[in-house]
Amino acid sequence: MVRKIKKKDYENLSESNISKVIDLLSGNQPISKKVACDMLNIAYNTTRLQRIIDDYEDKVEYRELRKKQNRGRGASNEEIREAVERYLSGESLAEIAAGLFRSSGFVRSLIERVGVPSVARESGIAVLPESCIAESFSPGEIVWSAVYQKPARVDHELSIDYQAERAGFKDVNYEDKYGSKCYAIYVMEDVRDDTEKWANVETGGYSAYSLAYDLGKLAHLEKYGVDLSRI
Image (tube, rainbow, N blue to C red):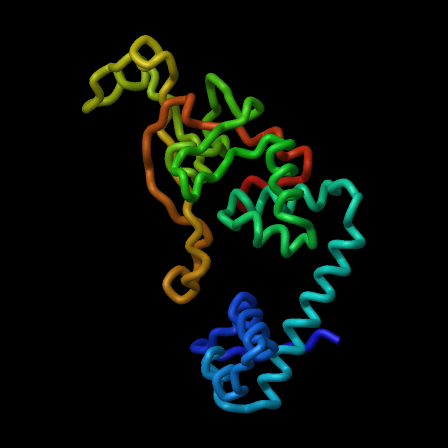
């Protein structure tokens, strides 16, 4: 039976820390339960300690059961939708895999197969798959910015005519100079974590300019039910 453990803000009840405590309790030179409570940053209470351990082991057992049930089964459209939305919203492959009861390798293969832009958290080098590459975009279109590694909304193209009609522009022909159109975009950032400060705002962001080859189309993901407004 999966138990619901109430966690205080200062307690360190991450799965990795609980797993470490369990290993140390069952090692050749086991730590005391007092030390185990200290490691979890909880008050010394052996009953609660055991409940935390039981809860963790129940979750691990259930997760392994679900992964076993999913083994050999292809991804459903619902799984694809959830994986894509969570990945483009910034979650790691490991987090997504845990939520879907799949392996990280399965999720990585799924992301690559359906043509999702890569999120280069460590290397800093993002890659746009072939299915995302385009020479032009429409105002209001939700795209992926390879430079900022975030979703963005296309505002307008910086065409020669657009620049000529407005003061402050140098009338640059971006296609001649860079071999690519240039767009004004609004890079979107999630602000929903700070509920007190942004109680009535779901998405924040900032304005930027981008060449077309640094933007990726996402419309092909909608056939899996992906809601581009949620990423």
